[in-house]
Length: 152
Image (spheres, rainbow, N blue to C red):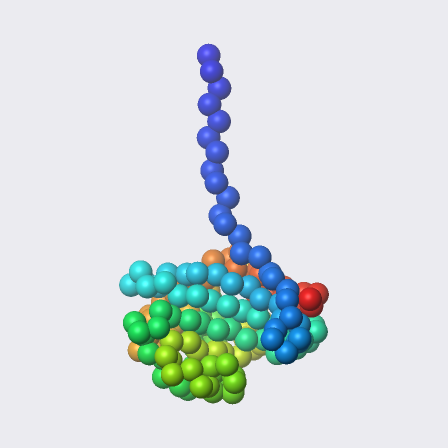
């Protein structure tokens, strides 16, 4: 009698990447592609500039030409009964403020990370853009490691 082993593939894990930006400032980032309830794909980048303790940002990028993001619009984040409104800081980003495609938005991630105590899934909502973008626990764990991750 043969033995059959059922193997369940592990979910693909995003990884933190550390590298210097164009000005030589160290950047540590998490990059993930997620789909909203309408099956639209979004690039979600959480990053920290500089050494540990540096600014924490969450950048959401849609496909240019398919979406237009107006600023400022707060990002609503929900975990169970907890709710955060992350401040839109897109226009303070030199890289995004002059981008005429308007397919990206950037938010202050620090208030969310200061409150999170577990790697629970998150639900993101950007009014007039998407109603729900699910962030799995392994991505939340990676975001929570950003503040103290070693710089490049």
